[in-house]
Length: 345
Image 1 (cartoon, helix red, strand yellow):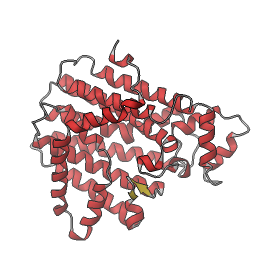
Image 2 (tube, helix red, strand yellow; image 1 turned 120 degrees about the horizontal axis):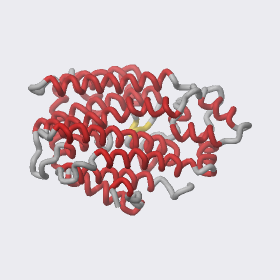
Image 3 (cartoon, rainbow, N blue to C red; image 1 turned 90 degrees about the vertical axis):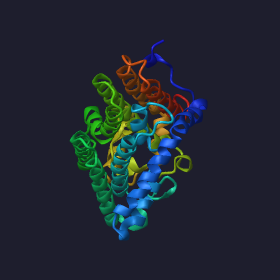
């Protein structure tokens, strides 16, 4: 059976799969933590506590993991260039999270108050800008301009995705193609460049560098769809962040698009009014309707399509050291989707 055709991982394997991949990266993540902590001295004393607070709520660090795995040469090899590249993508990612939480008016991330709630929205926006700036500064420290050029282009594309999504908040005039484009820019791009950095800095052949980038792009799209599902089907205590922010902030994600298509015609005006901010969001009602209309398995299938495309991107590189490690991340993501609930929930 081909990798792309493999069945999704079961819920029981979620913790083991995830722990297995990231336990292997523990020394690399430790090196990244030390490097990021050293960067605090580069920030002005007045904002160091804010920067440290944001870095402490950054989550699983899957993008740095992609850098390390794409450039994998052995458990005992921790290349300084990979650590620096991982820090670059992490700083850019954390900056986007800080800005996202401001726009979504989210209260909690990783079981802590968001920077917006802790320090106020205006300081949070500015510290996000400072994180962006320092990530780009670190990119200039590579001997070649290629890395700096790649991260600046990716940062621009990520910001463009956020801008497009912001301009379309409270609108229900959004197609699946529009949604896919936002995902491509907002999330998939940083996954792509993370894999590109790892493969390129490890000196891999150009063909694998390109394949790794495609893998990251499709995995990133799959991960965003999963994250959109979590906003409805997750458990706040378990995932450690505010649920229901997409509906409350008028962000038309794939679960909401699917719900709009499946609801009876006489029930869609109320949902459209909630998305438009014309009436209070009815999160419990919408979640119940999603369960009744089997939205979860539909979106889970869309995730699987992207996961299969990610696996296919590496099909010609079965003997390359990073390949089996990257493919394990596909298993992890599939297990996380399965963990959201039984089919049809």
